[in-house]
Length: 323
Image (cartoon, rainbow, N blue to C red; front, side):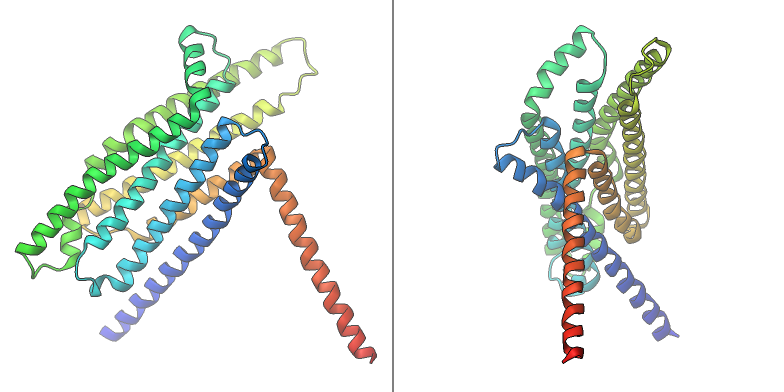
């Protein structure tokens, strides 16, 4: 009976690791495509907008977070029993935290830039923020990266110090007990993610409200020939991104609460966290004209290559049969 239970558990672990690997590959392909397109434009001297800078940085942070999450999962499931110290897991987890918090801040920054560039507000404060933030987007990207890095490094140094100290005085304690005791707590996570999420929702509501009022006025005016599809498209983007951001936040909070009360990672939900950013990046590709055009060209070239290869093989087969 024990062997049956162990076999069932091993199959679950293999399924979990396989799904994590699939999520990693999908994320690497999607995020790398965004990075490649924008970096190529910058390399060739083409204009790169502040939104392009944020989206590229966002893709980099998501690649880093997904790689660290998958590495942690594999080390935890396959090598934890053979580790002499849990410090390895602590370091991997804190690297994941750096990229994860950077992702949250950059998502908020993207929403703020969209709000400042597209909204029709003309107050003095709004115009001041537009003139201060939009031209300095690169500086704000660097600031978000540094803020996330320093906040995580301070916590990780304290955590590593406590783990080494307890490992010295309690050598009989196993690794799982140690890394369970000192990983990030629930209140710490909520405090560090509260402000970027608050900024995100404020800017998203302002942008959606502005677009809604503008489309309503345009409908009521005599300019019936004006195309409002662009405004509707942007409203759909704001709605979809808000749903993604809310779902991502809820899943992470559930993972943190689960760890806080049960001293264990909800691994299946962590795999879901790997799929969600890739899904959002796919939607960014679909909604961004430049990325959508490049993706269409790429798919067209791949299709032509496959069909050309198939035609070549068919001709060779015909020639062999003829001979």
